[in-house]
Image (cartoon, rainbow, N blue to C red; front, side):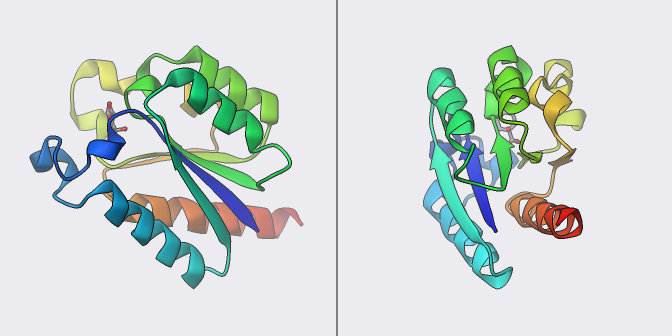
Length: 146
Ligand code: DQA
């Protein structure tokens, strides 16, 4: 089983950006966490990050044929990107949206998510563990689908 994990803008600044919200661990730490969680679940995980909306769309499109499922933290593009919603619909792979912070307890504008409309579920407010929860969710879903 292969999962593609796609992270959006400013997540490369983890550890530096608003540590009171996003914690003190870096993006490299997140990649390491994801690799370890994937290994523990005996699945292949490929992790990507981009600050550009179009690149994120391409990364979603390229998941088709390369992965069985998608985990997406589109960061700020979550709240604006119909293009990412359409890309998820186009590839029609099971997808889970993840946020490190609890977007529902923050500013009003963070409550809107376009990609979530094409996702099986949204996991928010659990920090790095949210990615592991999303992996477990997709492993379970894909196992029962087979
Ligand atoms: C985020 C939440 C978004 O609202 C924000 O723009 C981010 C990170 C999160 O992981 O908590 O950049 O997606």
